[in-house]
Length: 226
Ligand code: DX5
Ligand code: ZN
Picture 1 (cartoon, helix red, strand yellow):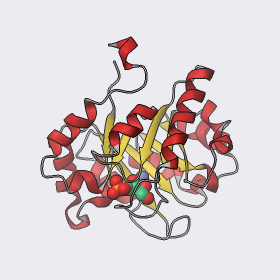
Picture 2 (picture 1 turned 90 degrees about the vertical axis):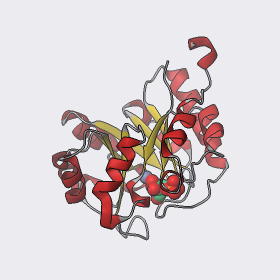
Picture 3 (picture 1 turned 45 degrees about the horizontal axis):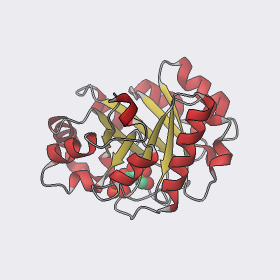
Picture 4 (picture 1 turned 180 degrees about the vertical axis):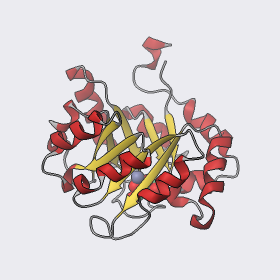
């Protein structure tokens, strides 16, 4: 039976000690590392680039989940493949040819993700969802950690889950923004498989317990699978 995956986000770590932050994530029992790439154009903030990913890659076997919040993601894909990202997620709002980009990422043997911001309707990614490995639902306006989840976005998770099941698709549904112990049960109940956590993870006093608590949550069809 699938259990929810927690993907701690490096964005909330102390950037002067990123290697140490990755060790903290590993020690807490997480298996994914979420890497927020911000270009100061698609979102009003800058974070870090492919070199950071490559440098961390050399000392970690976590699943590297790169989230590109950038314009023209097609110009950056090769650098993140080269850097060793296991999954590369880009925004449909910044890419006309999502199908082509998904194909390129998959051809490199990586998981391909598509993401949508809160004001983009689910219908706008209906076609891209047919080819994606991951659908990342932004539950805050992207750009900064530590914001509050926008409740309407949880309904989008449920709609995407229903679409996936109806169409017999197999992508993972990821949620990103304002996820903590209070909001996690609701997004898992709506159908989320992967929970990105920035500030909630790094501000937690017991990170192992946090991972365990979220992993113990059960989604829509758990009773049939248990
Ligand atoms: C926001 C980023 C998130 C961020 C989440 O633009 O995409 O991944 O790190 O941070 P929290 O969990 O603090 O909302
Ligand atoms: Zn993110």
